[in-house]
Length: 251
Length: 261
Image (tube, rainbow over all chains, first blue to last red; front, side, top):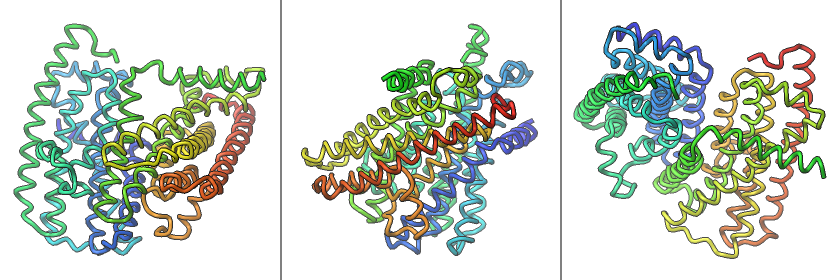
């Protein structure tokens, strides 16, 4: 059910020009910006980090906007009641949507790497190429699970869009996707430590430039499983509350 | 006088229509917190890469912040009429539709100015940037002209929304391109020639440069030419938006495709 659901939602997302633009065009623009910034700073040897970082930023945008709107979109399409009537746990119905947003976000990573290679001649010399692939998969699945918690939280808020729009840059910044977290104020450290995005970004960076990939990937996965459990409970609570108060379809 | 009233009152009513179905949270989250963190992101990245100083990033990104309201607002000013099926009513109006739509850009310009001022003030306090008090009038002028130019740019994109189905794609890509091409984050001298040239015809490029000159303590004589160029760019987009709206209105009537999504 998870697999079929995920494939269905990937197909649906892939037919939305907006989703494809956000997943592909915008990250490429940001990757270009990152490349020129790194060049301007005399950091040509770190261009591959810029491409990977920009790609991961695209994955996060896809998960954030996709998961944030996962339930709202079903509401607007008039399909929320139908999927909630399914005789399965709500988590099994919503998780495929958030996983699909993570997988669609993988376009970003691939697009920015291909763009960097073809246009700017960035050599894709990963120190641990196999670990990079594993870390990317872990990161995408982990963000999908994190997205479930976001979806469950956002459904409680009438204006989830406000939070969605406000959360894109803070997570990019605090997770160290392009800016090393060491240059940020110390108070951001504890926030970064509990975000799966921080560990996912770190795992990808370590696979790219060298370092112990597996501990970071493991922590990323562990935090995401906690998000999955919390999201699952939250969804069950939200569903029961919405049924009891007859507010499921109300925005 | 009637035309001015139509533009200002009509613009304010349309602006309220866009926001009255939401709570202030959507305004704060989207138009205040989002741009502030965007600025901080590039300021810290710039610091780490030592591309330019804090003033470059804070002032440049504050002007860039104004484009959010202008580009998305301007796009939605036209796009939402179509989406909610009210475009026909607007076009049936016996008054000048050019004045109606150009008037829509005015509140977004004011909104953009407010966002730019908020973003620059808060970020300057957070990162310790000192701005000379004498620079404030010049900065406000640069931001105001940049905001208005962005709103007319957004209106031009909104006009394209009369022909293309998904205006969100156009506006999202446009905002990302402004970040790259206007020199607010990468000094224009470090961009390829075609990118720097394209940037000259986009809103906020010249406003950001003028604002940086004011923030650096230079006067009107130094920043004046850049302000003039920004005003010309804004005027150009206002004329282009008016022409496109006229042409697409005619085409929509001719092919009966006004409400087609």
